[in-house]
Image 1 (cartoon, helix red, strand yellow):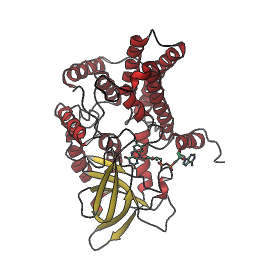
Image 2 (cartoon, protein in one colour):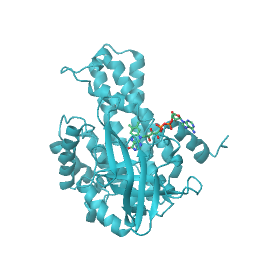
Image 3 (cartoon, rainbow, N blue to C red):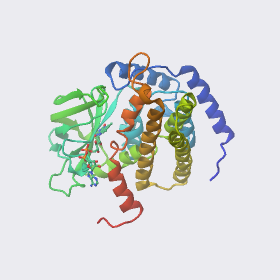
Image 4 (cartoon, helix red, strand yellow):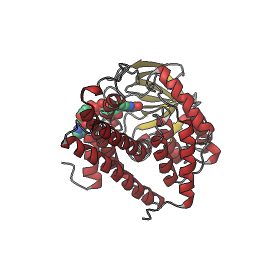
Length: 383
Ligand SMILES: Cc1cc2nc3c(=O)[nH]c(=O)nc-3n(C[C@H](O)[C@H](O)[C@H](O)COP(=O)(O)OP(=O)(O)OC[C@H]3O[C@@H](n4cnc5c(N)ncnc54)[C@H](O)[C@@H]3O)c2cc1C
């Protein structure tokens, strides 16, 4: 692969850097609180107005037709400038690639511009009280309503990130209870203010109200809001999962910026740090860089028409464990200072650590990813 950036890519990087340095907001509260969510949304609408919300999308939907490499460059610059978490991420980074792949033209034209502008805010309704790792065990059901031309959904979803603040849900429902588990599922798109939907927010480990349970009681969804084929929801969901585990949700820029902040922190605490911490800092910096180069290779392969498929699971294990290691090293440097900032709130590193701990769980646990890697990448026997 060619490791040099083209003149156009360098120019794009310079434009992104200048705009982001001038515009990225400082000190926003967590986007997993109601107040913080609203402030993040305001920022993300500013990103959209400057055509930076969805750079890789077609211009017709609010993007810049950027290449995958340019998208990676944007992501590096976004996090380098201190850009905050994106509260619209589950729509833009998970649902959108699936709509591009499986959506009808009408669905693309309706859903994508509204998502990019932040008019419709999407959350992911997959997990249920008895279906997490075993996603094919979904029990929420979709019953055909032939006369009305659609489906009636009932059941309970849980762990719905920012569900209490979102307007729409993409979810998996059992549409054929007689079919083999992976075959009888359908992927639905629905507004959370539809009659029969109840959303109940609840708190996370760090106290933020970032999760919701979503209860559905005979909720009508028209045929036009099925994504992909009826009873083919599993393959549609696997496309979303591949985006979640692979490139789009957690690009290298996020970890490069965190590793840079860690190196700066090391310089502040150098005198009290022991050699083990130095090793951890060096390893974090090298691993963040390794993820960057690996991603360039992946993007080159994808641009050449290859499908990385189950290899997305390797990416997921790598970035989620890297994130924990970066934060572990920061906490070791900070010692007791990690507990509080001067104003008495939990330090950003502590908050980041608590969230990093969830990385090996969300997007499919790392135990499950290791099963996938063993069976589908390495070809090992199931037992
Ligand atoms: C921060 C965060 C955000 C999330 N956001 C969403 C969201 O927006 N929408 C959504 O639908 N879900 C979301 N989830 C839920 C997430 O997808 C599930 O927590 C995850 O899939 C695991 O399911 P579970 O919690 O039911 O654990 P379980 O499936 O009960 O697993 C418990 C433990 O058993 C292990 N295990 C289970 N089966 C196997 C196996 N076959 N082999 C080896 N080990 C196994 C698991 O790895 C895990 O350690 C989120 C979770 C977190 C932490």
